[in-house]
Image 1 (cartoon, one colour):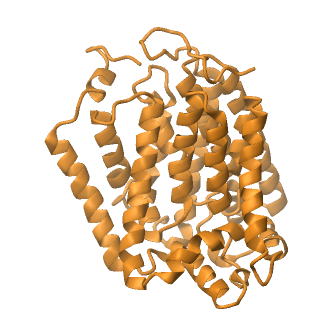
Image 2: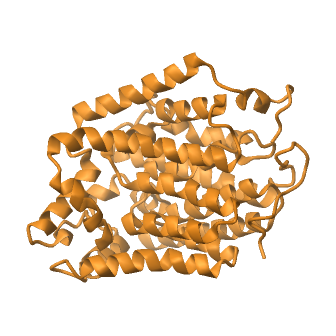
Length: 398
């Protein structure tokens, strides 16, 4: 990490002053209070999961709602919310979402050994909250994507310290709540951490099978939700999907070639991520950039794929800014985020039904930038001391 006076990193890692912390508290507080005032059940997406739990507690099947896309284990996890007064959920869920986002950011900082009291710690979270529209969307929706936003940096922080089994358990619990981080199993394959991979797979499998036994429709996820996810045939969901597989057909490309193109792009992204894992540089950057490459590749083909999914990878990349040669120092990293600036009016793209086009632009540009960096941009990556090198103690790729 370059921390000399001639590099902006030296300024970023120094302690933040009181005014910066006050500004961050004001922005997060305003976002939270606004969400409490305008949402119910903690947000539309959280309400879907909580309503599914209420249906189950009343003896029905949660999979009667085709927009409930979670494993059976999520139904049980949401049951405590279903027992709480709605007025309490209106307050508790937005607060919990903001805290989880802050936790994910803190873990990303510690992964890169950036002090939690630093200017980057404050300005990074402030920039995400005030300058990246999906951050506010995620808080207002109460979407359970926030579990992945917190779990992935925590997993990588544990892995960087050699605690791979614990890292696998973190991903396993997150997948049991929402399957978003399932592609992270590839990282454990890259690292040949078989025990950790087994833990990652067994936790959601055991939790889902156990929970399914208590549902009136134990196979509902397999017979209803999985076919829906594979077909992606939903007019409402399609309006907000950002993956090329969903956006290209809306531009006139036949569905089959669009899906094939997305699959090829995702496969290329996985190959680039593997190259990054085997490449040079500090262990922290290799973990973060490999994981980001894997998740962005998955977002290119996943159905659905929303803009707030980017918050799973963005904190990991942004927290690596003090490292010379990090992907966050590439101009295209920042240009990819421009379509998500709040308050900017984009002609012909502001209507809800067209928002997915600018979301797809951000996803594709960011995915290409990370993939290119994984293959070509790691030669200049410096170690934490500011000298070229790498730490391979805890995450040695074997």
